Length: 328
Image (cartoon, rainbow, N blue to C red):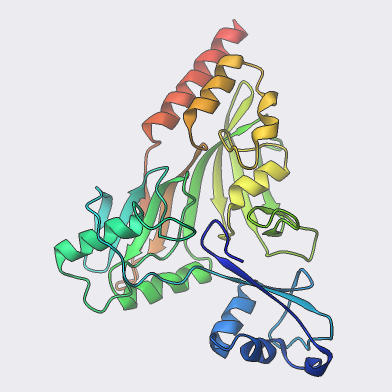
């Protein structure tokens, strides 16, 4: 089944004749197009669930086991270059750091074939004549369509591999500014709740019961309480699909403007002017404002920041003004 984010879910049920086989060996036979190494990597990343629970490669499958494998979208090797402007924060011979605007999809998939960051990068790399044998277009991680902010892009295979390794080891620092509905308490905390596909609405993510789904850890700090909103500094230690939006919706504090997970709770905003402004915002209030990693060649620490986009800064100013006027 193809999902909206371009990933694909494969589901297999273990037959009695296969009972007793190691999970990794069983899946290598069941999914012949994937190598055992690839299968093991997916298992370690908890992209393989057995009866809705993560398992080890050495797990012995049982008759009737339902195994769900989430396959990320395949790398797009051939793209149509498009002259889309790029907001480049930093560039050297190994990488780019770019600011992705809200509304832009990172790479083609699920019916989107143009206007993506990947299309823009393909054009840019062509101009620079540096494509060569690189793993085009070098995208190492992703942001949701309506999330703006910083992304690092690899220019060559060694850089791609080194950066990917840092992400897999959770060594990359990823910080976000988020405005959520309601007063968040405590003012500093951690959300450790597994995330998986919704059992009914498979294109959506949700917090799963303990032991099910994929481990997900979100750290947050309240910067400011503004009327019916809380402005947060958020760091994610894992990179699960829709992680911040799902975790804060689960807490009862959906991200402002998130019509997918939080629309039913917009009524908690008492000011009709701000409810209307949320509708007109056209995106959710989530911005990847800081990104830190080690340079793939030199190993030196690199840290980048990005200011709030104009539309988010304007909404924040309106919220502060309305909160001040209502307090008078």
